[in-house]
Image 1: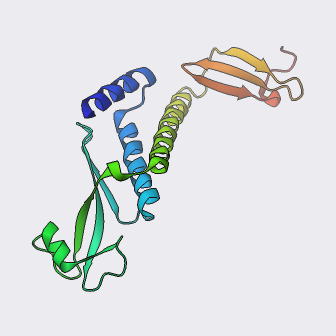
Image 2 (image 1 turned 90 degrees about the vertical axis):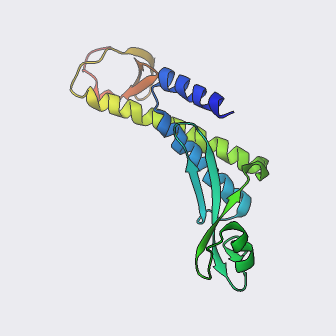
Image 3 (image 1 turned 180 degrees about the vertical axis):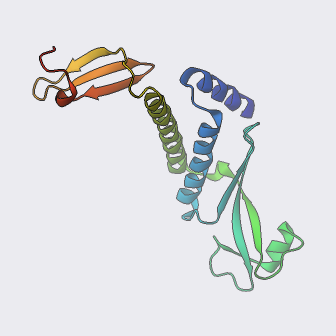
Length: 174
């Protein structure tokens, strides 16, 4: 599964020019959001991801206490000793979370966060490309003209588009 993911990320990097790290960060954030939907809290969720292999591990940080009042953030000393022999009262123990437990809604949330991360990466790439071409003449294709306001929608190529407002157009040109 992870080799397929990394191959897909390599293809995405080549086709859309979005760095793998951006997508992996989005996946990491989506896992945190899925945990939030599944467990109700995300403050104590730690996601460790290897950006070379795509392997990840989700852990929930729990404080070792004498009397457990909150199952999400606290753990008893005997249970903590099973996970970490050095656990003492007041220390933090990391409990591994199985991502297969997440429900349908958490999976949809993760998918949404990943898509949002991809869109944000594309948008940042387009912005940086346009900023590097500041004060240059750019050839574009007119896609549509708003008859009421006179704004022109332009296709800049490579999936980019822009709106040219009437006040920035050359007077008398059509």
